[in-house]
Length: 174
Image 1 (tube, rainbow, N blue to C red):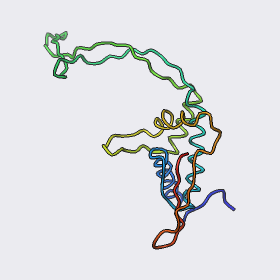
Image 2 (cartoon, helix red, strand yellow):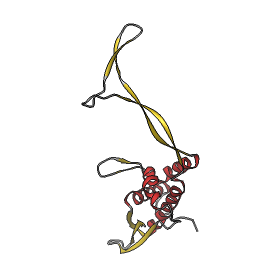
Image 3 (cartoon, helix red, strand yellow):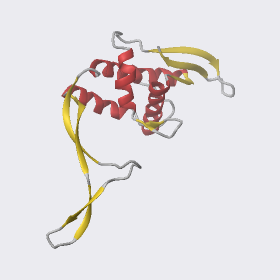
Image 4 (cartoon, rainbow, N blue to C red):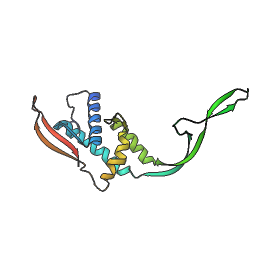
């Protein structure tokens, strides 16, 4: 007996389907699907959330010097003229340096992020903006489950699907 359901698909199709559904579950909080798919998605989602909960506070902060272009009142870059060694005149963008605090992942958190990148895919919201699912998982989902040991998902039966009578369920984050 295998340790997973094949779901009537080839390996690549099955992995893509599960990756997409786990991503949707984490971003949207719920997914309506068949019972067999939900049980497989639940396994992957529980593992992903457990890994994120374990590692989400495992970072340090570091001050970094950042150089950016100076902008005028209309948001355009301020240019200044410079002369090259060959006496050619050209424009150079004026720059300003600022310091900024940046989170630096410790090795185990970095390894967890890389592992989650293989399980999840980036998605887009309704405005067309890209959502990095791993960052969303670490910043929004993991803190919610910080004191909880497992049991992050719930399966609620909805009844048979019209057409093929497949048992439908709602898989949601608790």
